[in-house]
Length: 418
View 1 (spheres, rainbow, N blue to C red):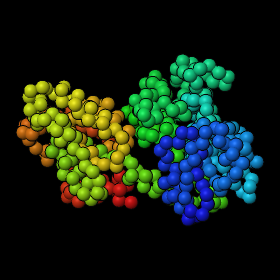
View 2: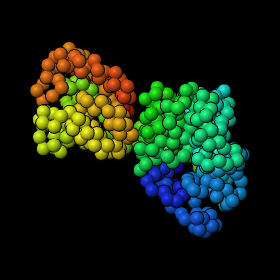
View 3: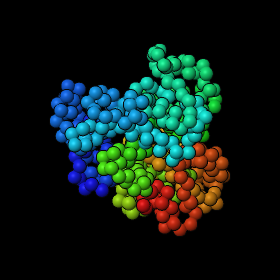
View 4: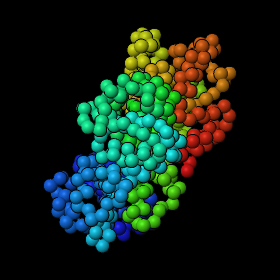
């Protein structure tokens, strides 16, 4: 640990929100600053060398190479630098994006060896991904929106889609605030095994969500961000931080950012669980059905009777969309929220989806739920919805016994207990 003695930071433009200060503080106790620099400010910044180490982000990962005294062979081969260390006035450059990606792929059991990879984008991040693919024994093609040397177009990629088993997105398509966009149509690929998206915001992009829906392995840029910072801290301090800090750092940031979203059948106990969980974790609880009743100015039952289910489902989708950002809250969903995939995509962006499970014989009719007034209607609904709950859930929580056991299981599986 360096306890803030090193002068570290991040340069780029614009910077906006960055997790980097929190990550480096957690990993090595560093006092880490953000320096948003215009290109014309770079000369003066590097002439002063008033730092011990810096990370570099868009758009300067290639530009900064001209200011360095020595460049690590891997970074030189990649043609981009994202980590610079000042040693006695000499500047040394490294690329830890490459190391972070390799670490993430291994941790998520994504096989690259003997695989053909489509790498979307041709910028600095793409260069790091190419090096990682080669290092791990794979081959690749670079896919670009425009025809250029060394790249193929998206049209050419689709023409030979069956050749690719892994896809890596290094473009900003799908990044906040353009969350609804996707760089490719995953349904067009017949042999894909894994999808990697280096975007860190939202935590789960539409591309990743679609990969999950197709049953593919997937991982995202948030984990890569933490892993590349871990590697950068080695260069900053000369010592590797404790490797267990990688997972615990991610978990700590999830606690600050990610929502816990509860889905499940009516009367499965979501309201009780969310209330008690909110109290235990001291987090805001949002009941989607309560939000809907407030906006309707009446009960959901009355809405169904007077305006129909479709009207209610449209409102429910608007509420789900309004909850897509991460606020580290507990969201308790109505039982039918899973009837529209778009709802679950919104809630999954910055949320972990917890399916609150209860046996059919423990569910009971209620007048307040317009679609579950009888045991027969509950049985029919149960049969229809169980496959959907299973499809969207990230974790499954047994709520057939003591509520204390239910809460403990949620806290353990979401990392809140760690």
